[in-house]
Image (cartoon, each protein chain N blue to C red):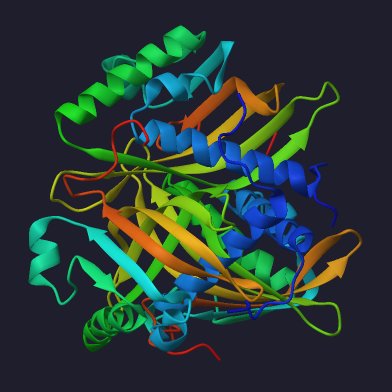
Length: 160
Length: 160
Length: 160
């Protein structure tokens, strides 16, 4: 069976490296540089259980790099105050190239959290769907939909 | 030290993408398309603690795509009834090309499960050993041995 | 935004495969072959909470392949005695090539442990920083700094 994605190996590698760097920056709390991996007009949607979305600082949809950075900054400040370290493991990446040169990705992500002196555990499992656009010789996220596995909307049916 | 695997970069990428798509399909419960990633005469062996193998619907060895699909369909139905989402993270992939053109892989897999509205956790850690064969411009699994880390037979000794 | 790493796709793939094999060997407890993935004069530093470093067999800094192998052998013997299986998932790899031909990597690692007949769990989350040097057509670790996420020194600030 032919893979449905139409993408060459070098592009796949490039996108893998894009995500590795992006999540390292977030794990390190370097929100300024992390935000620069998003397009200025990027949209970041979150599909999470209602209490997680509305109780937290982050609205379910953030529009624009500034709003995206603000939400991340809040989350980073909160976990730093608690001394927690958070890492993001992205895997199971598939990449499709669209006719307009953008690429559409899908991946699963594990968010792993460690309290100071304590044990790591998997805090959250999510699926991401991104549209990436070229910027110089790199990429920017133009649109992200991040579905938490504990949300009713988590993709568990046949793929759209 | 030279890596023991004899495989070019593009093939390695291709195999990575094969697994990413295969486990996405299973996580999404799209058993029909997942089953098509196995050869019609594929053999799927599971090395698990006795109670896991015999208590569950899946026999330790499933022969043929139809039997493999049936076992997966049972597992998917069970977790959907419980509202659980399951993701499979495959990593630490090594690939060897055999003289007959098939490839032999080994990888570790984490099965991460999330109850509705609840917290994700690592449900199972396994090691997979597959034989893959060409099919068109894609690949099919012809033989899989999946060893659960909690089974006595888990590979913890020097590699064969 | 251009990725800060200057590395071609084939090299990235090669380094991914290096790590996949290296951690498979350690997970399998094949310390002899695992040790050969380190340079004879390699230095392995661990940034862990004080009680983990000083209470365990491993000193915080191990100098030379022989000392590195001895520490690993102790850890493998201990977990075998307890019947535990340990797997290492390395991800979020970034690679930079230095002017002298060595490469500098950074990655996150999950250590997943399973007791006999029991459930897997994430035992530890760490960040690794390695210097790798060419050896024949493969690579060797010349210097590794492994920071446990539960240590005070875990990298949570902007990257150096």
